[in-house]
Length: 387
Image 1 (cartoon, rainbow, N blue to C red):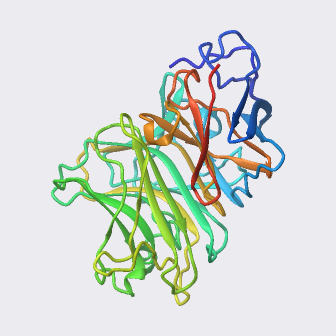
Image 2: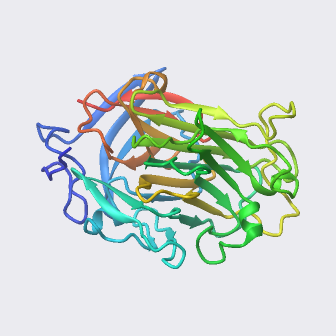
């Protein structure tokens, strides 16, 4: 999966995210496409930091919405993963694209750090033989009511499940950084939202837990079915699309999404309580909580891990205020995709958005499509990318 530099467009650090096979004639990428009376034009428009961006412009009257109010990214051909050597420990740093701070777990909690690995130009980080490694973004204030919260991460787990009580906790929303400063608080751990899987169960059982939303007792309410990666050493897109709703009210929603090689992207709507018939709404925020949610985490914690157990993480973004994003895919619709990866977007105006022009684990853009999801996270349209 070579990503050698070519004379198309270069990032500010002199690299190019394009391989010679992406656009072999060296032309500046351009694509026009019309769907439902809306003309969409793509052009490489600028570089930002060390990331190349592509622009999509809709015709007058088209509306991309507002996009995320705040966002943080990791990977996508730029930033820490690509500015440091293979084997380097990944530590707390400011993301060059979003200018937000990623906080990485201190070495006092687990001695083995996240380290950078490379697969023919595709970078990722991995840790092995530990209970887990966490990294997180502090939103900076309590998560507000009636707000869209979106988490997306490319994950891989392997050699998991040999311990009799093993479970893998991955994405999490919490008052504090679990595993970081102050993150060992019992109250903070219970008053949180997280997805996890009992990885040695037969069948594999992925579930979601919502801390103090169990009415104050961790054992007061059952967990809810959700989507979660498995321990098969396959790269898996993992997502959470949540709407916070209002305090103390069953009017929030949670969708957990998943896609891995050979399967279509799919989502599960999570019920608050599987024993009560209340539809798909959840009580997401409590007004009386002493520790309101504000941290968005990748926790990757495993109970009783064997020495060969490990996690890998790559392209990740969290955002608040919108679930709008793009997916780059091998098929014309998400339902027919057998491989896809997500890309964070910025809405520059109602008819103009930009995003990282990044092929992830694809070797080229030929025959690939972009799927656009609006602010609510609803699939809206697709357009071809390749020439």
